[in-house]
Image (cartoon, rainbow, N blue to C red):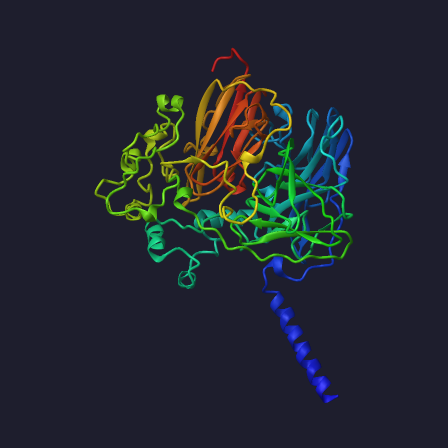
Length: 621
C-alpha cells in the first residue's frame, strides 16, 4: 500500500508538472480539445442582411475583443449563384464608420466598398445597401476596408456556385478560413511597428545559434549588421503575438472537418489574415490544386503551397485511410502555425509536426539577383553576366538598366553601389554602405520613384521569382506549388499583347516602417494611376524591399506573365517575393476608381496603396 501510494504521488506530481509546463508550450503544441466541427453559419438568397457590431470572442480558452458580422468570427459564409442578382443590406452598429469590400468580385465600382475611393463608407447606426449582379463563380471573401477593423475579425468567406455544371468533381466540401488574432489591439500593434519595426521578431540570431551552426557564419552576420539589416526579418508581426486561426478557432480548439474514406474532399482555403503568409500542407495527403483566386486551373498535384494574404486556393484531397490528418498552416517565418484536423469521426486527432527551422533572408532577397555576396574574391567583381533583366521598351524609356555584355562588371551594372575594381570582397563593400540609402538607391533605373526618406533601397538586380515557392521553401524535399505551375482551365477572355508597359516599384524604409508605391504614400493625395477603358497593359511590380508583398487590384483580374500564353493563370492578388519582381497583363475593362494596394494590413495603413482610375476612351487625361 505504501509503495503504491508513493508511486501514485510521483505520477500525480509528474502529471501536474506536465500540465503546468503545457501552459508554456506554443499554442500549436499544447494539448487539444476533442475537436470542434461546427461549420461557419451560412446566409444566401437574393436579399441578405448583415450587421457589424463589437463583441468578444474566445480563442483557445482566452477571451478578447472582436468585431463580428451577425455575431460570428469569421463572418457568415455568403453563398450565391452565378447569374443571380443580390441585395446586401449592411447595418453598422459600431461607434465608428465601417465598410465591406467584396474581395475578388467583379461589380460596379460604387459597390466595391472602399471608403474615400468608391463610396463614403457606412456611418455609425446606419445601413448601406450593396446591390449588384453576380457574374462569376468560385471562392472569394469579404472584409472591412475601414481602418484596422479587419484585424479584429471583420472578414468572412463567399462561395459562388456556377450556373452550369461544375467542372470540379467532389463528394464533400469544407470552407477553411485562415487568419491571425492578437490580444493586442491593432492600434497598439501599429504603434509598436512604427516605434520599432522589429518589435515582434523573437527569432533573431543568437550566439548560441552561431556556435551550434544554425545561424549565419560570424563574418556574414557582422556584414549584415553593418548594413543594419536583419536576415531574420521575414514577417513584421508573427507568432510572438499572433494566434493563428482556422475558421475562428485556435490550435488548441482543434477545428475538425469530417470525411468518409475514399471521398474527394474539396477544401476552399482562404487567407483572410491581416499580416500572415501561410505554408499549407496535410502530412500524408497529396493536394490537387483546382482553383486559384476563384478561377479554375488545370489540376496540379503538390505536397505544399504558399498562400499569401488575400489569396484563395481550392484543393482536392482524397483520404483513403480510416484515420485523422493534420492540416498545417505554418507562418512563413515559422514562428507559429494554425492547425486543424481532417477525420472520419469527431474526437480524432493526428500528430502535429514541429515547426521547421526559420528561414534567413539572402542577398537575393535584397534585390541582388543570384549573387553570393560572401563568395566574392579580392580580384574585383567582374562577372560577365547581365546586370538585370530588362525589356527593350523599358530600356528605351530609361526604366531599367539593359542587360550587360560580356565583361560587364557588377560595379558598372550597379552604379549606385560603391564597388570599384579594387574593392574588397563584395560582402565588405556591402557592409560599407550607408544604412539610410545603402548606396543602392540608383534612381536612374527608377526615375519615377519619388526621392524621399521613405525609400531606403532600389533593388539593383531584381529578378522574376514567380517560379520560386517562397522564402525557406527551396529545399523542403517535396513538391511545392509555384505560380509557374498554374495554367488556366479556360482560354483567357482577352489574349491580346499589351499596348504598353508600366513599372511600379514597391518601396519602403524598413527601419521606419514606411511603405509606398514608387515612393508615394496614399496619404500624400497623389493623382490616381490612369488607364483608358479597354487598353491592355503590362504591369511590372518591382520589389525594392526585403519583405514579401501581396498586391491586390480591385475590380479586375489579371494574367500572370509566366509563359502560359492564352492560358495564363488569372488572379486578383499576386505575391511579389523580396527583392524580386512579378509581371502581369490586365485589361482595363472596368470604369471607375479602384483601390490598388499591398494586402498586408499595416503596410497598407502605412501608405502602400494607390488609386487606379479607368477612364472612358476619348476622355481627356
